Image 1 (cartoon, rainbow, N blue to C red):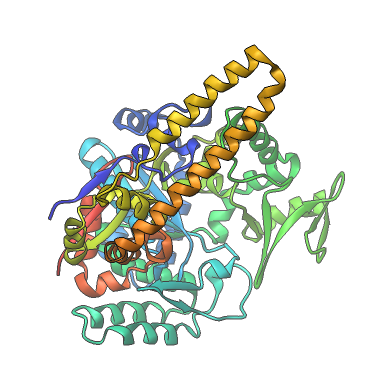
Image 2 (cartoon, rainbow, N blue to C red):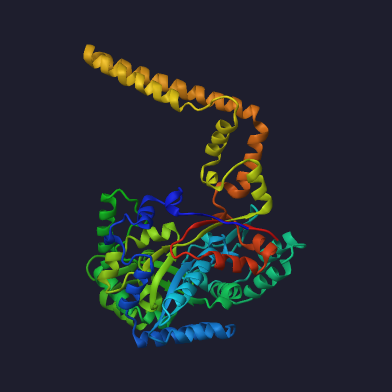
Length: 529
């Protein structure tokens, strides 16, 4: 079955900053190497990662994988002790049952790219890594998923870093999901995957097991950076932030440069971009004048010396926010590239000078692949309606209006009428200015009235024609709601469970196989059972 691929620069998918980065129009002031083989060659030559760090990383990963790792995973972890082994990383939250589909797309892309680089740089080895966002504390973002429009929610009173949450209560959600598909071809297999995973004690362990069951045979390594030994590698980073607020200074400067070029700002820095991590609590660290610190809720206070001693004694109690997490990542991994979505790339592009201040190499940034998964029934409906996939990047109303104009037996294109009206009033303003400037106000008022009247007439005619073509409109709406559930992109709404129930492990194989590009694409992937 044929796939259809779109470059992100050709569709309305990303903001102007990310689009300019992908098209090569963004200044090198905001990133490092280009996302191509030459860029990877340069990155390999310049990334430095010590033997002692590799030893800590390997030991920590082996400990995390104790109990359910495969031989291939252990070999991948062991390879990280060698100086010619590098990582390609993506990260994501610990969404319940993986959450929206793009969770899988990120991981498929990082695996595919690592496999490709292993064929291009045969003297090196590349390991795909999924960084679990175990320290996030926004439970509401991860406690649910949608399956065919139905929302499944895990209710829990737990607080703090979500990776430490008990999985108690998730079994009822899994049972409800599986109950939807008693006759689906791979329902038993999906049930086994989910039930086995969420038997694990914590959400981080459960997520690792689920991802390992889906992708472990591809050599993926899953890392939980909420780890004392790994945090210890970043002690100097934490101390620098507390003593100098360097990230706030550098990000603010970079934000000013971005705003001067008309780009949107994704994240604004705080004076201190660190949290303090306790068993059931993750609280922002704040500065209170010279040499004094506290938690945002005032539950703890320190002098500067006390806090610096705390960091050196208990580095695991420090947790980076969204702006310092990337620096922590590059501190503990021999990493070359990061694969993320548009929002992630936007804030990474705020960070180059922050990396420089911390003496860290800025990774190559890659937009993850996006997919639209469509079955043959949907493909046939598109063909019957003579619609192309590109049309579904429009809003529902815009698509309906486009179609009404296209299939109507009367001309509903008012483009020429609007242009004629515009030309008339250009001429009238010229006459008014040459006759009596006091008439210009009257001309402008009349222009506004006429344009509004023409727009209203156009809307009324479209509305009337929609009634005439109501059956056609209904079929468009039905198809649109399948392709863009709840009005959003499928990958941001739907869970993988429906597709896994139909395709089984073939779904994973297809996603990895089709994630062939270095820089991401939007791929419409047709499937059939």
